[in-house]
Amino acid sequence: MQRWRGLADLPGGWGRCVVTIGVFDGVHRGHQVLISRTVELARQRGLPSVVLTFDPHPSEVIRPGSHPAQLTTLRRKAELVEQLGVDVFAVLPFTPELSRLSPEEFVHEVLVDRLHAAAVIVGENFTFGHKAAGDVELLRTLGKRFGFVAHGATLQGRALPDEQDGGEITFSSTYVRSCIDAGDVTAAADALGRPHRLEGIVVRGDGRGHDLGYPTANLSTPRFAAVPADGVYSCWFVRSTAPGERLPAAVSVGTNPTFSGRERTVEAFVLDVDEDFYGQHVALDFVCRLRGQVAFDSAEALVEQIDDDVARTRSVLRLT
Image 1 (cartoon, rainbow, N blue to C red):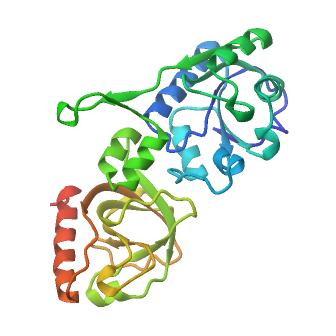
Image 2 (cartoon, one colour; image 1 turned 180 degrees about the vertical axis):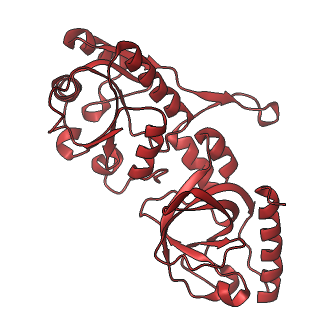
Image 3 (cartoon, rainbow, N blue to C red; image 1 turned 135 degrees about the vertical axis):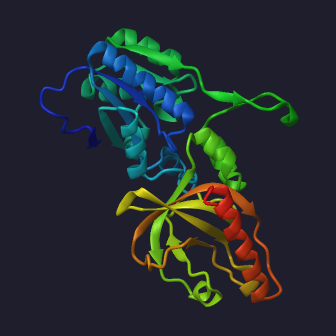
């Protein structure tokens, strides 16, 4: 898969292509369907498939300070897109100048003049151009004018069980963020099609976990990372140096109230591994929330609870 930053220097001889457009944060199951349809149509036409996304998040440029929690880093997004068979992952820097393009200007300058789109596939709620003035119907109209076809794909979701009053939820990045914010990593995984991943660099902590007999790898996470609600989770621990290896881990998210902590931390106790992960880039795949954050009366009571957390992690990850 080719990876482009900007569209100023496309490969020589670049011809027509099939494009899908979006932020695609999380690359959830709805995104996966949209991207897969793009890949399928491109193959039918004998053309390359292009995922066109934006960085930074448009919200941060249009309304500074409103950047939503980030489900996937740009690198992780590219990895997930590549797994779907896409030919080109194109990142368009989202600038104030880009945000001011009218829908007609965006289509002409980006889709027609640069990418030479033969077909464009977007979600049925897609909007574009200055103040989100363009919609799928306008995209179809402009496509007829400029020589490409536009498809608005139905949003994906699933029915809720009767005990939750029935109805249906639509897979969206906003929905996934709400699940993670509530600590419901199981529901988030259902919408993503895989566990939510949190990445970071292992940094030095206060060493208290080592003193308790449970040394932890403390993650420094990206600024806008979607960190689950405070609590204890069963996770898979993945190192960038060994991406095919998954290590079981019990992970604490929160402020360590037993010791009157104030700073929110993410601490992973990796089971059955005696290694210092300091300085390594790692990822946590959140499988299940075991419990909320609790302040214990003593260190001994905390250790007893951690013993149980580790045992439950073994059970959840089916290590026993």
